[in-house]
Image (cartoon, rainbow, N blue to C red; front, side):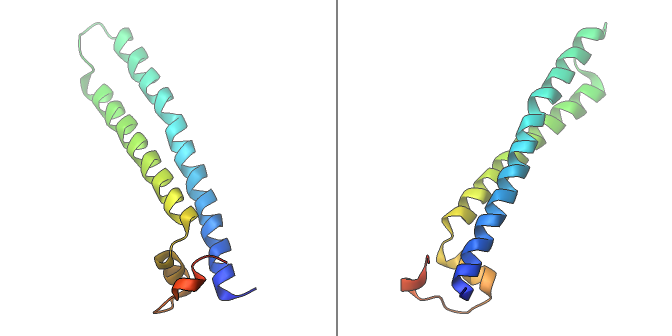
Length: 100
């Protein structure tokens, strides 16, 4: 196995890791917003309060984190020359050896 093929395989493994982490974060978002809804309906006072605001911020953060990881998964899946250069540590990658 050449260095380029190993870098290509490594980029696909990293892509799978980012897909897993991204979907895990995105699957937590509905539960977080459901907890906010349940919490706000249980309280007698209107508004979310400090805890509700923290939960809302947590839900938005999870959504952004999940989206970012999905984007990183797409970048590593495409495995452009700069990804190969990043994984192998080489200075130059020839245009003919972008993908094995």
